[in-house]
Length: 177
Image 1 (cartoon, rainbow, N blue to C red):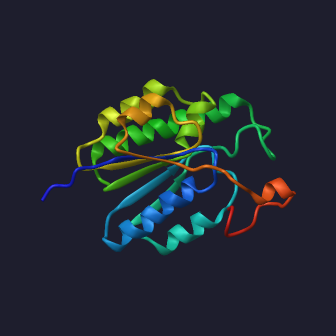
Image 2 (cartoon, rainbow, N blue to C red):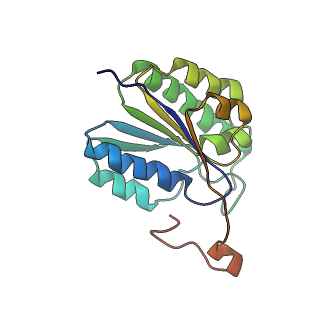
Protein backbone atom coordinates (compact mmCIF):
# COMPACT_ATOMS: atom_id res chain seq x y z
CA UNK A 1 0.00 0.00 0.00
CA UNK A 2 1.45 3.40 -0.94
CA UNK A 3 1.35 6.19 1.59
CA UNK A 4 -0.25 9.56 0.87
CA UNK A 5 2.00 12.19 2.38
CA UNK A 6 0.56 15.10 4.30
CA UNK A 7 1.53 18.74 4.63
CA UNK A 8 1.23 19.50 8.35
CA UNK A 9 1.44 23.00 9.82
CA UNK A 10 1.93 23.86 13.50
CA UNK A 11 1.54 27.64 13.87
CA UNK A 12 0.22 30.30 16.23
CA UNK A 13 1.51 32.50 19.03
CA UNK A 14 1.30 29.81 21.68
CA UNK A 15 4.10 27.53 22.80
CA UNK A 16 4.38 23.98 21.55
CA UNK A 17 4.91 24.04 17.79
CA UNK A 18 8.34 22.42 17.79
CA UNK A 19 7.25 20.20 20.67
CA UNK A 20 4.27 18.95 18.62
CA UNK A 21 6.61 18.17 15.72
CA UNK A 22 8.92 16.28 18.08
CA UNK A 23 5.97 14.31 19.41
CA UNK A 24 5.27 13.28 15.84
CA UNK A 25 8.93 12.20 15.59
CA UNK A 26 8.58 9.92 18.62
CA UNK A 27 5.51 8.28 17.09
CA UNK A 28 7.13 7.93 13.65
CA UNK A 29 10.32 6.47 15.15
CA UNK A 30 8.18 3.78 16.75
CA UNK A 31 7.19 2.69 13.24
CA UNK A 32 10.73 2.91 11.88
CA UNK A 33 10.00 5.97 9.71
CA UNK A 34 13.04 7.99 8.71
CA UNK A 35 12.65 11.62 9.79
CA UNK A 36 14.79 14.73 9.32
CA UNK A 37 14.27 18.05 11.11
CA UNK A 38 15.98 21.10 9.66
CA UNK A 39 15.91 23.99 12.10
CA UNK A 40 15.68 27.52 10.75
CA UNK A 41 16.44 30.47 13.05
CA UNK A 42 17.66 28.22 15.88
CA UNK A 43 21.26 27.20 15.75
CA UNK A 44 23.61 29.06 18.08
CA UNK A 45 22.55 27.41 21.37
CA UNK A 46 22.82 23.82 22.56
CA UNK A 47 19.25 22.85 23.44
CA UNK A 48 17.62 19.64 24.68
CA UNK A 49 16.17 18.38 21.44
CA UNK A 50 19.67 18.09 19.93
CA UNK A 51 20.77 15.74 22.70
CA UNK A 52 17.44 13.89 22.65
CA UNK A 53 17.72 13.34 18.90
CA UNK A 54 20.92 11.38 19.47
CA UNK A 55 18.84 8.78 21.33
CA UNK A 56 16.45 8.37 18.40
CA UNK A 57 19.11 7.61 15.78
CA UNK A 58 19.22 6.24 13.15
CA UNK A 59 15.57 7.00 12.38
CA UNK A 60 15.75 10.67 13.42
CA UNK A 61 18.22 13.43 12.70
CA UNK A 62 18.23 17.18 13.46
CA UNK A 63 20.24 19.66 11.42
CA UNK A 64 20.45 23.17 12.88
CA UNK A 65 20.69 25.49 9.89
CA UNK A 66 20.21 28.94 11.38
CA UNK A 67 22.60 31.40 12.96
CA UNK A 68 20.52 31.73 16.12
CA UNK A 69 17.47 33.71 17.17
CA UNK A 70 17.15 36.75 14.91
CA UNK A 71 17.15 40.17 16.55
CA UNK A 72 16.56 38.94 20.11
CA UNK A 73 18.55 37.80 23.13
CA UNK A 74 22.26 37.79 22.29
CA UNK A 75 21.96 38.17 18.48
CA UNK A 76 24.42 40.68 17.09
CA UNK A 77 24.70 39.30 13.56
CA UNK A 78 23.73 41.35 10.51
CA UNK A 79 20.42 40.25 8.97
CA UNK A 80 22.33 39.33 5.80
CA UNK A 81 24.09 36.49 7.67
CA UNK A 82 20.76 35.11 8.87
CA UNK A 83 19.32 35.43 5.35
CA UNK A 84 22.32 33.62 3.82
CA UNK A 85 21.98 30.75 6.33
CA UNK A 86 18.24 30.45 5.59
CA UNK A 87 18.81 30.46 1.83
CA UNK A 88 21.48 27.76 2.17
CA UNK A 89 19.08 25.74 4.30
CA UNK A 90 16.40 26.07 1.60
CA UNK A 91 18.90 24.82 -1.01
CA UNK A 92 19.46 21.77 1.19
CA UNK A 93 15.72 21.33 1.78
CA UNK A 94 14.95 21.38 -1.94
CA UNK A 95 17.58 18.69 -2.61
CA UNK A 96 16.40 16.52 0.28
CA UNK A 97 12.71 16.80 -0.57
CA UNK A 98 13.28 16.09 -4.27
CA UNK A 99 15.45 13.05 -3.45
CA UNK A 100 12.67 11.39 -1.46
CA UNK A 101 15.05 9.68 0.99
CA UNK A 102 12.98 10.51 4.10
CA UNK A 103 9.47 9.58 5.18
CA UNK A 104 9.03 12.86 7.10
CA UNK A 105 10.82 16.19 6.71
CA UNK A 106 10.22 18.85 9.38
CA UNK A 107 11.09 22.46 8.62
CA UNK A 108 11.24 23.82 12.15
CA UNK A 109 10.67 27.59 12.44
CA UNK A 110 10.54 27.94 8.65
CA UNK A 111 7.45 30.12 9.05
CA UNK A 112 9.42 32.45 11.34
CA UNK A 113 12.16 32.62 8.70
CA UNK A 114 9.45 33.53 6.20
CA UNK A 115 7.98 36.20 8.49
CA UNK A 116 11.43 37.73 9.01
CA UNK A 117 11.99 37.85 5.22
CA UNK A 118 14.92 35.45 5.47
CA UNK A 119 13.27 33.35 2.75
CA UNK A 120 10.51 34.11 0.27
CA UNK A 121 7.06 32.63 0.15
CA UNK A 122 7.75 31.58 -3.46
CA UNK A 123 10.71 29.55 -2.23
CA UNK A 124 8.58 27.75 0.37
CA UNK A 125 5.84 27.14 -2.21
CA UNK A 126 8.49 25.56 -4.47
CA UNK A 127 9.32 23.07 -1.70
CA UNK A 128 5.63 22.13 -1.55
CA UNK A 129 5.68 21.68 -5.33
CA UNK A 130 8.76 19.41 -5.14
CA UNK A 131 7.29 17.19 -2.42
CA UNK A 132 6.88 13.58 -3.56
CA UNK A 133 3.39 12.16 -3.01
CA UNK A 134 4.48 9.90 -0.11
CA UNK A 135 6.47 12.49 1.88
CA UNK A 136 5.02 13.99 5.05
CA UNK A 137 6.20 17.62 5.23
CA UNK A 138 5.83 19.47 8.55
CA UNK A 139 6.17 23.26 8.81
CA UNK A 140 6.41 25.03 12.17
CA UNK A 141 6.46 28.64 13.30
CA UNK A 142 4.33 31.67 14.02
CA UNK A 143 2.49 33.58 11.32
CA UNK A 144 1.64 31.00 8.68
CA UNK A 145 0.37 32.77 5.54
CA UNK A 146 -3.05 31.84 4.20
CA UNK A 147 -1.54 30.52 0.95
CA UNK A 148 0.35 27.82 2.91
CA UNK A 149 -2.69 27.05 5.08
CA UNK A 150 -4.69 26.56 1.88
CA UNK A 151 -2.21 23.96 0.62
CA UNK A 152 -1.81 22.12 3.94
CA UNK A 153 -3.71 18.97 4.86
CA UNK A 154 -3.54 19.54 8.62
CA UNK A 155 -3.15 22.89 10.38
CA UNK A 156 -2.99 23.31 14.15
CA UNK A 157 -2.82 26.75 15.74
CA UNK A 158 -1.25 26.99 19.18
CA UNK A 159 -2.95 29.73 21.19
CA UNK A 160 -1.20 31.34 24.13
CA UNK A 161 -3.45 31.66 27.16
CA UNK A 162 -0.86 31.98 29.92
CA UNK A 163 2.94 31.80 29.96
CA UNK A 164 5.44 31.95 32.88
CA UNK A 165 7.35 34.70 31.05
CA UNK A 166 4.39 36.99 31.76
CA UNK A 167 5.15 36.57 35.48
CA UNK A 168 8.83 37.38 34.92
CA UNK A 169 10.02 33.78 34.95
CA UNK A 170 12.91 32.74 32.74
CA UNK A 171 12.95 29.82 30.31
CA UNK A 172 13.20 26.38 31.94
CA UNK A 173 15.61 23.69 30.76
CA UNK A 174 13.64 20.71 29.48
CA UNK A 175 10.46 22.76 29.08
CA UNK A 176 11.47 25.73 26.94
CA UNK A 177 14.78 24.59 25.49
